[in-house]
Length: 200
Image (cartoon, rainbow, N blue to C red; front, top):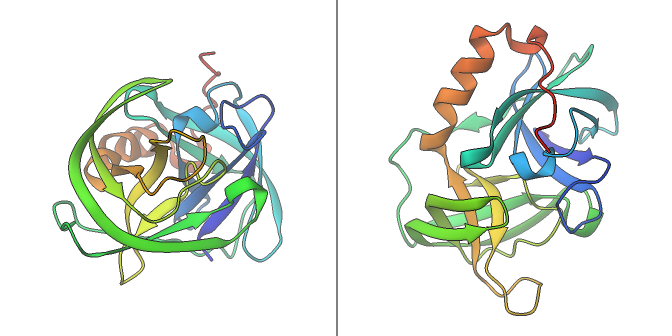
């Protein structure tokens, strides 16, 4: 129930302006991938219980491909639990959630294939990534990668693919990278933080 569907205009995501995110604070704060919102500062958010909210981008860390969205006038939200840093191990179960190709509330499963990976992406070189074979496709971007206890261990960011589709090699920004951006948004007012313009 913490996973949300994001609709944007002109995003980089090949899902045609569709991305995913995860509510991490019940006041209405959502973690997602920055490339999902790099062309927009306002988005439409659809929650798992079919409610629709306007969202504003209030946190940006493009160098880590992370962003935070604040929902307007949101209530009765369910927040995901963020895992403790340093708890991800190769071989453990991994669950990717989101809206691949616009199919909301989709779940795929696999394992953690590797950690501390580097990947050259359209937004630059990303380091320290989690590698997983859980199928990740366009539209999954920004959604959570969770462990077997449903704790968020990463934010889905990219795939390595020869075909353009899922080839069993997906990547997520690890939980270790969340803290600075979350603290920055909290310091700026949390859900009331000012909207940050799109850099692109």
